[in-house]
Image (cartoon, rainbow, N blue to C red):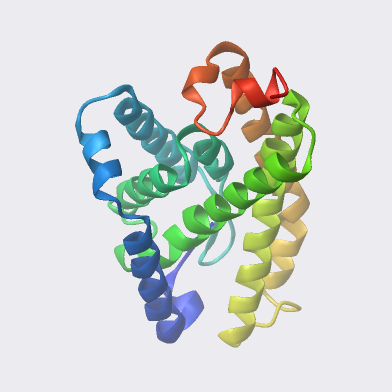
Length: 222
């Protein structure tokens, strides 16, 4: 989701930048950065993911002035390259689309939190919980981690934005909140379907690419 600066106000805007900076610092790893810069296959996957995300995020529907909805794709990104690299790819994508002027550069931090950090973290937590609590089955990975995980990410972002609307004087029963609620079912299913379809193809044809897919666990049950 992409928001305009006038929609959230200066306090929430700079708070978003602060949280974004903290998350970026937590995600930083010299070893991960070194591996990424060595020109390995992982580098190609991360850069390819960044390009794919920038394309997805640049195609968005404006449901109200200052609010743009788009396919996130972060669930597939996290399962494919891991939480840390998915955040970096999302940041590159956010930078790419912000350089076009929509959204404004000042919104890179808050929008990165909404479009990348929140769904990436939720997906990672769901994948870990599914690995610990559910049977080792391919359909668990596809439907729980991918399909329902992606839909849950959209729902979580909608709730966060609804809270932000309330904090900035735009309660959810008026204006933007109503539009977001009306569009929520129309966004959740495509998000779940696209992420689930992409990961289904990858785990069948290129399981070695999918970082969070353990073939011994999900296919062999051990």
